[in-house]
Length: 221
Image 1: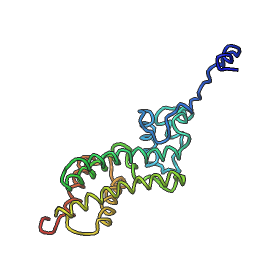
Image 2: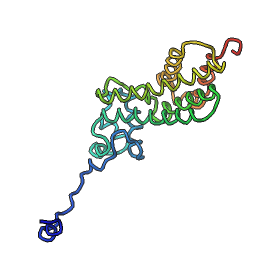
Image 3: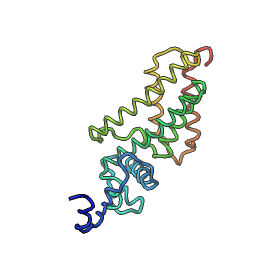
Image 4: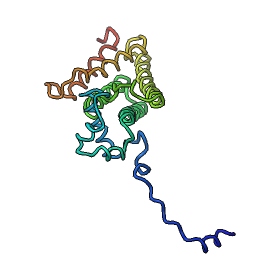
């Protein structure tokens, strides 16, 4: 029987309705404003209560959302944690690519990376962008996050190497310098008080000044 004959004798089947879960955005795709709002709410909860202390109900309640509605966007809390990392790394890797193409001097490239990282971890995901509990991630998610974090780390090392090559930075172990630099920035949320006297803009600028000054050759310091 041909396709046309089959269509003429078989009643058309009603279109299958796709479930709400099937229409939800893919994991790690934090493009919708609602998903980003959920990530920000989760980051606040994780910072205040810790990953294990924060619940999906806590995250949803802060948004005046029912827990069931939150599951439209994320399957579980671990997926939210993974999305927080992905959102942060998406932003940082995009900036890294822009800096690579900018033609700026190494010190200016490094300043742009430091300032953007500080703003991301203090203003966008409220202190938890890059220091959320990695051990809570599933094996697959953990490998992906580490691989992307390594890419950003190597990008910072490349900028340091450029600075050493053109004399902007004193010769030294760029791997250790990158660890020290990123460690200092990532620790800021541990002590930063949003209600304190220093704004995130001031913190970003001062840290960029301090960290870059420490890289200069001795006669330029």
